[in-house]
Length: 579
Ligand SMILES: Cc1cc2nc3c(=O)[nH]c(=O)nc-3n(C[C@H](O)[C@H](O)[C@H](O)COP(=O)(O)OP(=O)(O)OC[C@H]3O[C@@H](n4cnc5c(N)ncnc54)[C@H](O)[C@@H]3O)c2cc1C
Image (cartoon, helix red, strand yellow):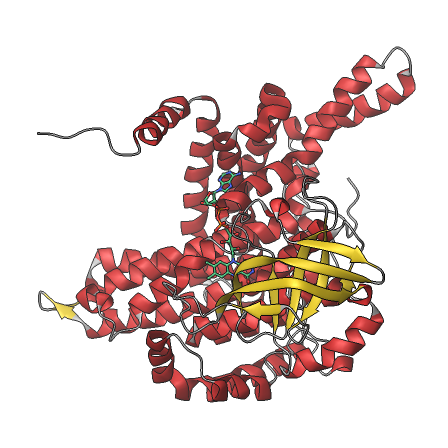
């Protein structure tokens, strides 16, 4: 496998290869970027800290005052990823993600307002826009004069994005857009909408095109502010397009390629959400540590109790591992790697679930206070929940992770069977494929170079071995599952989920190993001790979980479990009582 910029760490891993050069050493922030980030972070604190009480009031009132939005605009928060030539700050993925982290420490509604603008609302323009389109819109998007929104979801189309009904019909040099979009973040404050619409008859699945639609176009309207569980101060509305005439000059990308545009936007925007999750976890750790120090019961500070230490310890491990993973994915994007969709999906799933665990445990650590609206915990729990649902539900992303990462193995198996079939007609071609496959098997069996880490400090050998062992098991499990189910793997969701869970754990461990390795080398063993302990906890957890997932591939009670669910579906209720 070529180790070029088109390599994917996880795809290679499924073939049994560890593309170590992609992740070791842990990516560093350049001194100039660090300096810029430090000054942005300090100023952000000055901007947001005075609003600490306001955030909770705005959450209750479900509004974000226009004067506060103006403060965000003046700060430049809407221009983070826009090139300096167009009036933005020109941040790469890592700096963008780190900035959103800082915003999310203070307020999730603010983070999602900025995130929806940059991560998804205007990212299509950056990725697919023509020079003319960029010149026309980017300067106004950078100042926040125009706020952006991403319009994909519809009442009948959520996870199944290819099933949208909004249409764009060609009319001379224009398109006429008709349809309704649902739950659009920034809907109520946006002037710039990236809209996805069908450009063939409604029966052609997935044949869609992306367009830039502006608020001033006749026929564009938005619904009222949605009353939500969390992120209550952020704007979420329906957006309606009634015979909206859009010039072809506003088309983003090629006609019919809108699905790819949407997926590329979502993939490359995921480090924003991950950064937000890390910021929220850091805030929760600060709250819980303070609580553990200040609250006494049974004559002791609650920090003395093992069960409280267990909670906060896990929060720190989750946060450190998420931060390592989110930063690694952002760095891969910044280094020009093209194929990091699986890794980005992993970072989103892991960080959103880690945040959920942290928010729950922080609330528990606060006891009854955690349940009171006077304290920040319940708001953070409410705000955190959406991360597992939007920008791709974690269920859909797990299937995506497993199926995409297995693709190369599937191909190699297909090639193998093809080459065996054709071996007598074209022996040289067939032999070539066979020998490559045989080489891969041999490398798995003997554990030569590419199946092992070679650059990690020897003091991390035991943890590296956990990863290497899992790599062999993963390649074997993928191979076995594909041979058993073939194309039917698409319908084997529980098997795919187990593989995805193992892959998520493994990528997170790989990123954490690399991060701890860099700390160990730069700071020495004594200073890096807490990080070594974090790695010890994570690697032990991963070893156990991965083994359990692989064990369950062949022996499980999936059929019984599905039957239990079918029973409830059929009755539409729980079927038993004790009286
Ligand atoms: C606050 C908020 C903000 C949002 N912002 C935006 C935005 O700015 N722009 C935008 O376009 N959208 C936005 N959305 C929409 C969001 O992206 C969707 O809610 C999400 O994609 C899931 O779609 P759905 O809600 O229709 O759930 P469904 O797709 O109906 O899913 C229901 C359940 O079924 C599961 N499921 C679905 N299909 C499968 C399958 N094949 N296999 C296994 N399980 C499956 C899902 O994981 C989920 O658990 C937002 C939503 C919310 C709540």
